[in-house]
Image (cartoon, rainbow, N blue to C red; front, side, top):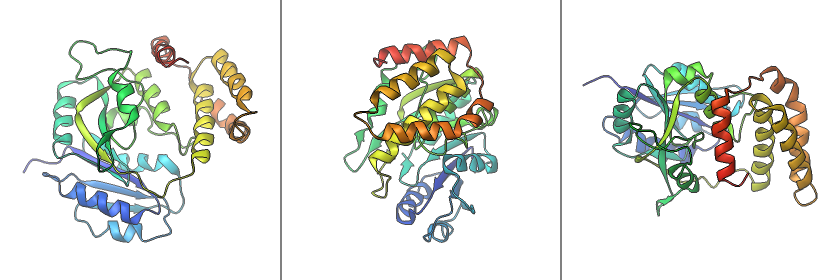
Amino acid sequence: MSPARTTVVIATRDRAEELERTLTELTSLRPAPPVVVIDNASSDDTAARASRFDGVRVVSLPGNIGAAARNLGVALARTPYVAFSDDDSWWADDALTEVERLLDTHDDVGLVAAKTLVGEEQREDPVVVLMAESPLGRPEGLPGPVVLGFLACSAVVRRKAYLQAAGFSPLLRFGAEEKLLSYDLAALGWRLCYVERVRAYHHPSTARPSAGWRQRVELRNDLLITVMRRPVRQCLLQVFQAVKRIPREPHVVRALAGTVRKLPRALAERRPLPAGVEHQIRVLEQAQGG
């Protein structure tokens, strides 16, 4: 049997039942990939249940570090490619084999975003439509449209590229973390593309944060990402637009307060993007009416 070439990395917290289903699906793949589960200090029996599966390595953290837990999983991987799943998502039977073939063939591709099918009815995630219709086009020879974003529950990275980009930012913790990693991969010259024939399944957990919480942290992180990577005029514009929303969206005040608290670290990590990547972002913003 040939050695494994893709490791599946999962960051989880307090979702033992969902994770158990995901691991059942992943370990039934043939060939079954090695799996690394990073447990963000769960209070339930997540780690114990995950440890019962063959081929699954479980690392229990003493605290919750959010999306950056995936960085540890990638560091522990010993394969050239890493597939991310959430504790409520998994890969189709042929997906990882297909991605390996694509990444073997396209040395400049650092990330492949999959077609994500949601729920028992397998409806397309709305983000899939945006990626499939990406205004960044599809250069000749690339296996799919160029994208500057992805869903962390259904993406495969070239481990070398991920490590060069330093992975998911600990500063952001949760929400919009994919955007910053996309920018950083592109800034290093890696291509990101959406490939429709690579499929993943997502059955969203019922144990999810409230919509208000998610709106707040995503706005905060969008602002922080702009501070860290975009031109100063874009930072000022985005803050101005956020302030205008305060009368009708109370969560904006807490998002701005959270941004201020993390601002010193964001400024310390500021690395403006190359002109070509900034141009791609503007093309996407214009296409989305931004």
